[in-house]
Length: 268
Ligand SMILES: Cc1cc2nc3c(=O)[nH]c(=O)nc-3n(C[C@H](O)[C@H](O)[C@H](O)COP(=O)(O)O)c2cc1C
Image (cartoon, rainbow, N blue to C red):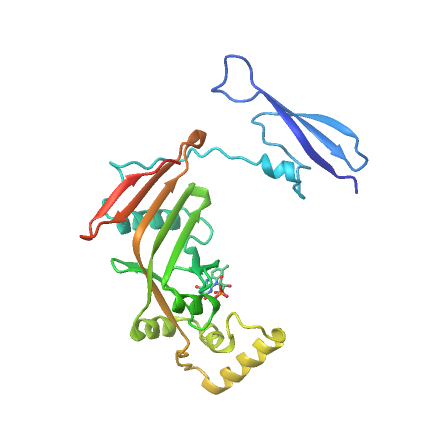
């Protein structure tokens, strides 16, 4: 198959019409046999086929985006960061961004090495942010040794990031039971079947475990003792809103010793 790779382009903007946008784009392509060709594309500079993977190093270095959707300022943001978070999470859900409830969780091991993974937020209130997992997992063992963590939401389409840091505690058994019992049956069996983060022989181990626990518990699996919720109690938040020319808005909230929230603007 004859494929072409984009190697450069030039957007032609008519003089005096910068606000109107490009008139046309000249795109240079290199084909399989190192032959260069130049195509002209009319309109906004959106390049059609065959601009496709693999991205080469230079292509990646040149990937850029201008953030222009919204702004975040001191007067329009909530004094309480949890209220600001509530507003942004609701806006992310209403905007139907993919997996608005997915957040990156960073923990640190006893030898001070950080690690991250994605988990789902399952609740939040004035006490903090809750997710559920296996207490014997890698993150669970790290939290047992060092109960501080960081969370990050990145709502790409909204050009927004929320960073949250604080101390982590286990939620009460009742909270874990309530959430566990609300899960679909296969997820409840899965909590028994998967020794999360441990090395297993193959997928067959999981399937065999699921069959075993399914037969044992039928429709009423109890919550495994090694499975439950964590709550991060925030002592620092940051709300990031992408802005034009890399002059992004960053508002950080820090808790004073008296428990009040101090809101500060950080340089982007
Ligand atoms: C979108 C998404 C949501 C996830 N949600 C959870 C979750 O809520 N709880 C969980 O234990 N793992 C969740 N995972 C899997 C974790 O990212 C991770 O693989 C697992 O928790 C093991 O991490 P660890 O070995 O660092 O403990 C999710 C993964 C993705 C991609």
